[in-house]
Image 1 (cartoon, rainbow, N blue to C red):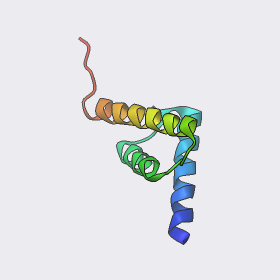
Image 2 (cartoon, rainbow, N blue to C red):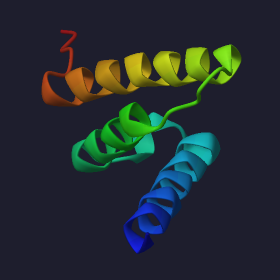
Image 3 (cartoon, rainbow, N blue to C red):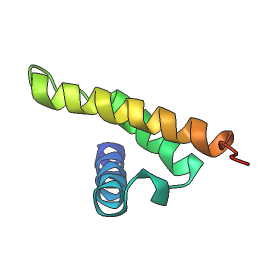
Image 4 (cartoon, rainbow, N blue to C red):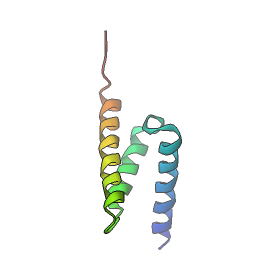
Length: 74
């Protein structure tokens, strides 16, 4: 059971950072951890929460892609 609490604490911490500063404030490793924790989270019958989760996962994937291959404008 302590693992569940640690995961919840980590998820809450990362979501607070995203809420305050946005996805750009997180490293690629932190983004990957956040994505993994969100994918494991089950919102059951709450369609709105599940939709928000999927939207955030899409934004995380896009941010990871942008950090690995940043666009260069000359």
